[in-house]
Amino acid sequence: TKAGRNEHREEARAAQARAALASQRHEEDLLTQAYRHTLEQKRAEAARETREAAELATARSRLEAFARKQRGAQEAEMQGRLERRSGMVAAGFAMGVLMACCWRRGKQDSQRLAGLA
Image 1 (tube, rainbow, N blue to C red):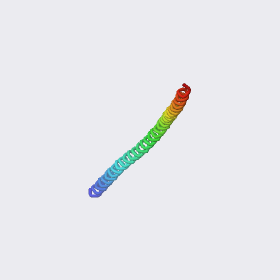
Image 2: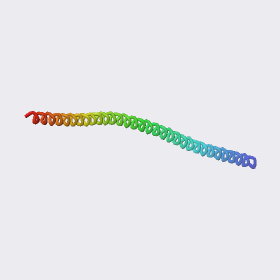
Image 3: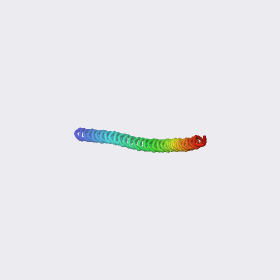
């Protein structure tokens, strides 16, 4: 009958509407999942970059500390070498003065002895 056909059409339309609504919800769920996945990827990437930046900063500070330590050791060694060389130069100068004085004294003694003879 006509009423039965109308009822059947209404049921078919309602089923179509439910199917369309279910399809729309499924698409929305897929989009939400994709958004969450993208958001999680961005967060993970940001965390990795932050961690890498911290590791680089730590490595840089360790290298700088090592370089300062090395420079300090080298400066102390250079200072010690300089002091030893300065001491050697001073000792050489003192020996030269001493030799000159001895030579002069020896010359004077030689002249005195020559004058006595």
